[in-house]
Image (cartoon, rainbow, N blue to C red; front, side, top):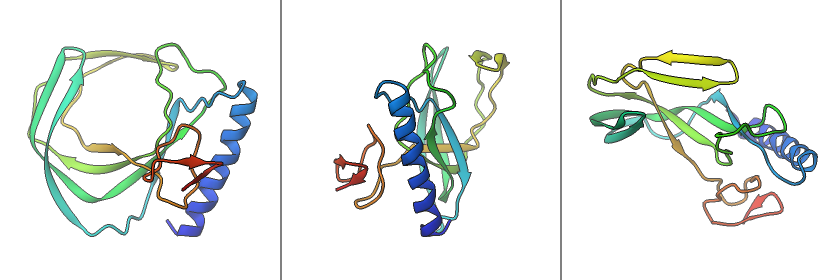
Length: 158
């Protein structure tokens, strides 16, 4: 994604965030993620990582997962409506998602509930690993977002 397009998207997001903030008494309600395919200028490569997934039946360890660089998706905190459903964590930071290959691991079935219904799912091996990101100095930032510099002042990381 070209830098100018990214700035436009982030500017639009900042405006939408201010609308949500005003409409909801000053509380940002980013309770979803909108994920976008991206072109990342990070050099191609791999990283081998171990992961422990927090499942309903306890932690499931995934040793020897290979993360393929660069990132394939950027997921931006998004609001769908102006209320946060019970049990939903408000999201304020973007995440970068990478292709990942892990050894096969048995998972038990889960019952998950969202606004679309109740889902009985049986996970297979992970295909994507999403890592929290921070906003670079000089970039647009959102209320409660984490700037790499640590400070979000008036919509800009300083």
